[in-house]
Image (cartoon, rainbow, N blue to C red):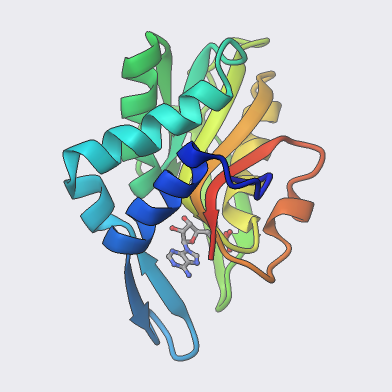
Length: 183
Ligand code: AMP
């Protein structure tokens, strides 16, 4: 995990990810090595291991789990259900029907916007943010800003994979970031 210590549990998570995660070169654009976690999500034992590993690391520290559209929703819904907490949906622009906070951020090519309903998160809620992959941190950084504008307290960030050599983790400082594997 993020500490890079190789406990038996950590090496088991890594072994499962090595076996199941698909790697697609030059997708969605040339030069990008896309880490496709859909086979991990499709495997019941592997999916449970990912979700349990993340929620165990943040046990007692959150009242709700925020997922970022779309793959983050899968992890967040499972984590919230497993811990009896609420799930918060952070969506791409134009999908939410009521008043929203919006945050735009840079992608490798161009810009994207994420939105959160203004009234979905009571002030003071302790929120764990989940997504599948941390690269530059722009996506999760936008989610942090949205939640903080709502008055929520971001108490942790969990991802399955962290791309090595990119400033995602430092861009999210001082928030605690757990990745199950660095690739
Ligand atoms: P970033 O905002 O740069 O941290 O990018 C993270 C978002 O883009 C996540 O929602 C990921 O799903 C997706 N993403 C970025 N890079 C990759 C990659 N190499 N493989 C898979 N997904 C990625």
